[in-house]
Image (cartoon, rainbow, N blue to C red):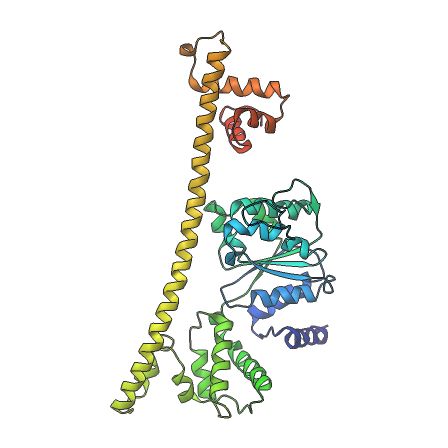
Length: 399
């Protein structure tokens, strides 16, 4: 059995580039081995750059759906206003610029697997439709009332703490439970530095094969230096760094001195201070280079932070819009209540009952009129079903 497991992991590495001998990586690989043959939803947690899409691809290719489509969707890269149409499709004329019918990602992935990256960025309205597909396989295109069905396995990924997002009312609790049927946690690179030499050799050999470069390897002191770095971008950052150094230092043995030439100033604080014997001119040139690189890094970090701020603002505006909508609906209910009392000459004078009681009576009358149909009741009152449900709950009426 151990030989079989060893062979599985070797094939796993060769086919999908998923490497790791640490306990944390072996646990993640073992979970893939167990869950891949099933149709269970999978939620992959991990920081940016830990390989979430790589693992999703592996799960699909080890499943019974491997001959069917694998569709990857970055939910954070699509504007909230377009995400629903992109996922579920839309009919011609469903919204401005919808000049033709469009098949959504779920329909394109039918009988296969859909990978929803950054699922924590998905707006609440879209989460409702996603939950419906998870539960029944049913959905409808934007601008159409026709019910469609798909058979799709869902793999989701996030770098957010979805449990905290549930508490913050940014993510539906019922959807979280469905997506989290199987949870795979990918560790940050700083949590398993013992795997860094494996990644270095793998990425270096791969880029050398692609570019016909003779690979002379990394010295022990170079690898030691790389193992001591923080790698905030995780495996993706390490991969880009190794490819850059190996390509630009064509044909050289990569040692500690070469590594230092390509480090950001903030990556390794001891890099400049360690070599006290360097002359003033070299130090000045090195400092200028580091300052330029640091400035570029600062601009990049600022842009990323700005993107996050914009996302947070959009969420806040969406929540505010929903609250304003509820207030507007409440006002409409009050207006309807006043009209009913004025035009229908209710026996009980308005001044003898509270506004809440009159509103309750009006809702009861409309419910009776439509034989308990809440959708028609809400439409007749000019409010949303959600507002009606909330009112029924407030007045202790059976919902």
